Length: 400
Image 1 (cartoon, one colour):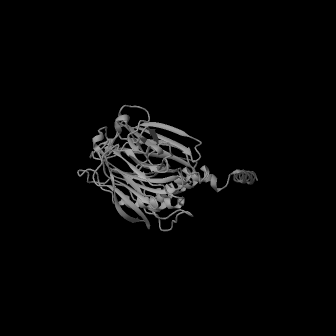
Image 2 (spheres, rainbow, N blue to C red; image 1 turned 90 degrees about the horizontal axis):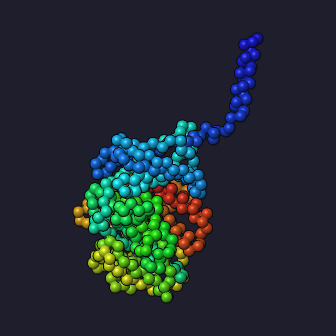
């Protein structure tokens, strides 16, 4: 009798526990881990003495967390007890020899019963500050008229000719906080315009305003690095002034103007029409290389109201042209390796998200320009850009 009573009591306790347990979502892991190793790419060995910083936040900017570790002889780092969730992002960056080496943002999934663990490799290089080893293979500018403004998509291929050192710029070498490592020259009229990074081979977590345009604060690795950015150019007395000073030597500087825009310049020659991505552009290019410090004078003629949708054509052209960019120095022959990830066959892109990588880049560039023009709300911009960047990451995954 006593045994039966104990069984009944035990059964009642189990029933009560089951009644107060939350649903299936409660089995999802609430916390996870991001760990990995820092590898010196010049020696292919784990790097000690690297300051590794983890930053995290929700997609709306709330819930900021920051942690710092220093690697030992094994080059390892380990951040634990991190909140999971689809709306929470983390980035792991390393500071080595005065250079910032930034990792791609990652998420810790919450739909697992076991605490998720992300293992990554952070690449660093020894650093140098010699600007004579930096140049541009191409500086390609795509211009599309939009009323009183011109939408610009600019694609640069930066080449670091050092075989085994990352460039951190003379400013960064001084130890100044947030000093730019690499500069991007903008026309005078665009220097107060919002600049958006549409695509880049490296993660650029911070842009710094300068008197010549803007700068990035990350180290530039050996070899070629592609950066595509957008801005708008206001009318200047009925014309659009693209004039700027070359910060680094440029092998070829080109302007692709979509009609009815035309360009006149002291350095550029009309190379005729070029069809890119189904759009027709008039191409204006330098006949010889541009030296550092040289002015490049370019004037675009006024354009009547043009649909902002045409900006997508300019961005598409930029994506196509980038495929064939040349290396600035003959001695730089090897490409930086990237890890290509294929989309699973049963995975389809979200609604209204392009399936092709170059089309995603186009959509990001167009979205940035539409926001600059005030055609999209901040909330819609953040939501749409997050979806596009997530889709872009699914096509090209670089080690963090």
